[in-house]
Length: 446
Image (tube, rainbow, N blue to C red; front, side, top):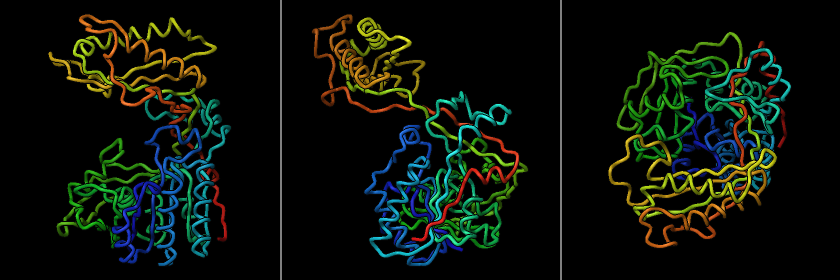
């Protein structure tokens, strides 16, 4: 059985030549993931997509025409980046538009992933809500809550005759593994295959975004990039199996986990790898990862750069002085709170530099950020910070201005509404019926 992974994130562009090469191999299913939590909480909170609608429509057109031309299932997970109701509706509208333009007819299944607050609150009260990492739950403040579905909802849709499935927030593996599992292929290798395949050619050397083909046979599968310049090697494929996992030998899913302790990776030639040995272990009780976002205010960012060695040497004191100076000009109260932060790229913008060198960097980039209850306050704080920073005194200063360079003007840029994660938890459920009720399937004749 052949499974074609069209895109690591549908809507951000599918390399056409590699995808066409994959379609020529006549896959039995075409699948793609369309979302991720990686871009942060803004898309879940705002209901918007990370991809542009025009690019998303182009990608949908490619995969839909190919799947209908081959008369094979098309499965798409985490629609519209965050997989909430507005994302699902927006992608469905694009899909309908493509179908109308090309006169395509098929049975579409949409699968919702929104989780009602009362279900999460009840789980929290019963001690069935566990944080992933240091995450404090804010259920009441959540604007949108989604659960990450596994294979069960996809299987329900396929068994009812769906030709195309468009799902809300979903595990990356579900669209790729469900058809092989339904057809009787071992679940361990099928999910292991899906875990590697969902990022397309990222598991290759050199890594890329090109379509990837997996061929399942017996208790193993073969991986091959559809771009001839990319090679799947035992090392590159085994390394990607560790991707986004808390344990090196286990891949956790809502329905259970895959054990990889005995997995083997064998090079069939310079570009293909045969993988075997994954074992599936089913969960006794179901669980769902829930994600949510809350609104925290309006964000304005300020960009500046410095090449003055005197400024750079005392930049930590200067930035603290700027923060103190702005606080005297614009009062932050409990009724109207605002926050101003700075990052010094070249020193500690990404991580702390415990032992900085004796000679400081030649130049640094400063990113300032203000989050306030409203856009006007955020702009006022950022503008005040810019002016303070531009003329701040420091030992050895040669002139009262010109110690700062601005790459764009105005240097304060409106970044729009700001959001934070309010849930990143595992919700334990008592029954599979309760689990399945979270992911309703709706059918549409297109």
